[in-house]
Amino acid sequence: FHFALDCSRSNTARVCGRTVSDFIRTKQNKHINNMKNNRITTFVAALAAAFISTTAFAKDAPSGVPKDYPLKKCVVSDEKLGEHGKPVKVTSEGTDVWLCCKSCLKDFNKEPAKFVKMVKDAKK
Image (cartoon, rainbow, N blue to C red; front, top):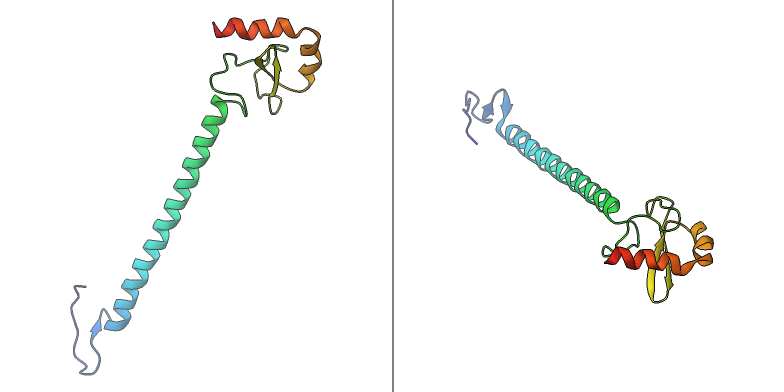
């Protein structure tokens, strides 16, 4: 530290009206507070980055639907996959078909070949 000493009293050196030990302690406390603030700032920035990346990926790939699945909408209701909760996977004729919700399963089971063909055509 650079400071000017006022040594008018022989037993106590003073800086800016405070003892040297008080002056150094104040400098140390400021340094410690700066370190705490830096940690808090870093923590908040990391949380923000995690939140942003999580929401970005959630919009790109609905929960559970593989990225290579050719459709983004339900073959039964034509609504976006994941819009009504977790998408439902149905396998028919060896092909995985993703539906937007459990309610579409009833209509899918009426004409499964029709909906499987839609997925196969989308893969071409």
